[in-house]
Length: 349
Image (cartoon, rainbow, N blue to C red; front, side, top):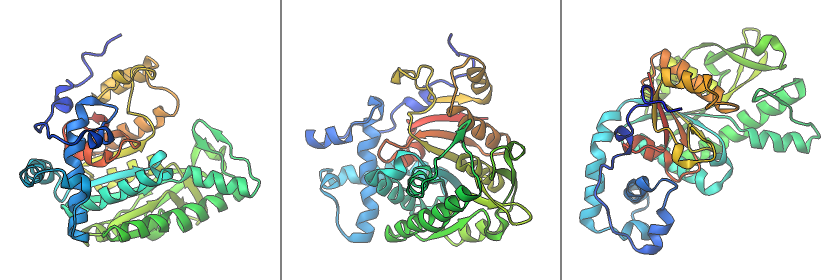
């Protein structure tokens, strides 16, 4: 079954903004993405990424040096409309999946985040840390359990979750942002009552929570200062009991409360697929009505359902666009924000 009424024409995200640049074949192979139409943007974004390194380190990488001076200027010039469009706009990024465990991808995400901040965007970084939580639970002989994609969290597990997310993962990400030339400020939902939680599913999952309220006062101050908030998805209820919050959900609710221009969920899949076994079936852009139809028809299922529901809720509360992005794709953040091709599926209201 096709979805011509609900899928926004792919030309809005699939046409190239830029002319082809010529690179040596060795570099061309390194930059080739799963989506051939995105090769051009990947090449040009390579220079955008290294522009920051130039400012910080005073030299260009070998790959960027392969571009002629005119080509380098063209890259920056052609990125200008996107930079202008998103200047001073808040973009909430949920960080997870392979981009958290693969060191080269992690390094790329952090540098891209700092680059976006340097050119005037206001990124907010929300993270989970499932793989690292599982590693520590295993070390302590605790077997992880999941129901409907959510971690069943007893008292012992909650203690580990808070220690790993707030004490280890969060501070590690802040350090990486600072090292890359940005200013990272680490927080969790408990800080300044950023997120107030309540039990999810009536408490049947233990200390798994859902968002009851969001107070972005502390974030407003951090964002205005030019710093990057880095938020661990742990919160507490009004009595101070800690809860594990799904990071996608936390990111969506924070984006809505901030009136963000864009919500981006980094995942381990290309985006929403009409056929999970066919990469060509990627839906590049779709509206809320189309999403609901895909869910009804079983085209969206499993772990993708909470993600799209999170996106739909954020859109309904005023976020302009929400994207499910392939975090395995190098520089996926820049591709999603600074090109019209994107790096996954964009959902619009």
